[in-house]
Amino acid sequence: MDNAKIPAKLLKEAVFTFVLSLIVFGPISGLVLTGFTVENKLARPLIIASVVTIGRVLFTLFLETSLGRRLIARMAGTAGSGVTVESGNERFPYAAVAIAFAVGLAFPLMADEYWLGVAILALIYVLLGLGLNIVVGLAGLLDLGFVAFYAVGAYLLALGAQYLGLGFWGALALAPLIAAFCGMVLAFPVLRMHGDYLAIVTLGFGEIIRLVLNNWLDFTGGPNGAAVPAPTFLGLEFTRTARQGGTPFHEFFGISYSADYKFWFIYLVLFLVVAAVIYVVNRLKSMPIGRLWEALREDEIACRSLGVNHVATKLSAFMLGASTGGVAGVFFAVHQGFVNPTSFTFFESALILAIVVLGGLGSTLGVVMAALVLTILPEVLRDFAEYRVLVFGILMVVMMVWRPRGLVRIKRPAFFPSSAPAAVPALAAAEAAQ
Image (cartoon, rainbow, N blue to C red; front, side, top):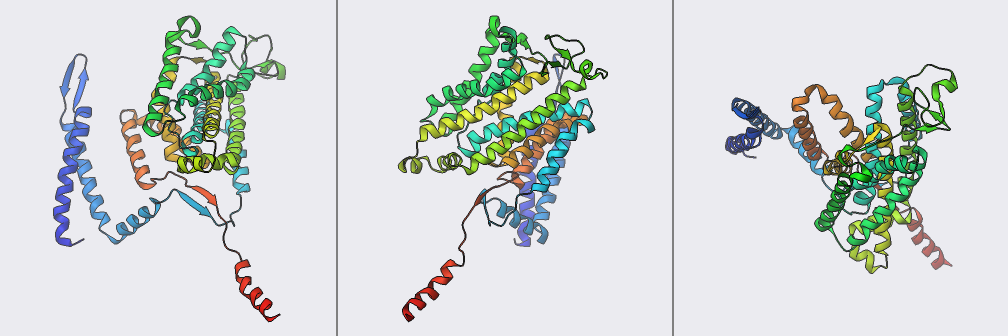
């Protein structure tokens, strides 16, 4: 850019940034509600707007340098296609996977109760992200009501224990089946819908489930929620005294009681389930059904013209994604020990969708990384409680600017020309000589 135009550009961006920052931060930080009165503290938004403006000007000046131009060129390269092609020479990182698996199994021995609870919540969101990634990332079906299947799994354990005597293991086996059935019920009305219309219908489905749970007082307990029994393992209970007719875990092994045993058990089972789901999802992506999901995402009309059964393909995506959400709901309920409708709002669906988008649509590794970041980061920023949401939002914006296609791009195997075509002219020459 011409050096004479830089001051005018800086002035224009500074004025625009300052005014926009005042509009955004003015009502938030300039008006403070104290009791029934509103106090004007306009110095705060002015300071924030000035800092943002200075940062914008410095960033613009940085982009005019040679390093800044190289950075722009690199970011422009990452903003292209979200698919990279494998060369065929990549090796599976067995050592890295083995180390990660071993560290995951040993994590309860290294963490205290607080961080173990954070890890359990992070793994639950990994499950939810993997389930929604099938629907949104692979099949391209925008689902804003995924939290409904999450609620189905949680309430299956709570209400099943209350009315049918259902335990943790029984709910864990039934949750994917019942959640998959609910996914099929949702999928049938939306088979012909796309884009915004599909999102609105799925959003309505999620809200219907939440309202039913909130208003059916006699069955679900309404806003009061329902209690969830503690898990058991082969008749061993992780409580101080036996409450379900079994034997306390600490008495069976002759050790002192600790409440950590329950969380260790939940974490280890959840970790193994997450590992199994990751393996299954990766296998599905390379199977014909996974190829059909991705083809349907890219061009449904072309798929139908080639004879692809779009009904079965969409149903399979909804049902498999919903089953994973149901399993996550069971673990959430047994971890919390209590469920109520406030845990299954639209915000949860938006957070799960953010995990899928930030991780990279269709990328299993990216979804796992994004789920861990979006659940652990708020806990790390807990000391900055007043500005935690602001910092969290800024980091998300920076992330989407830096990696607009997600943390990890999906990879596709490809066939490359071998040396066989080079041998064709020699073969033709040999035949001509004969």
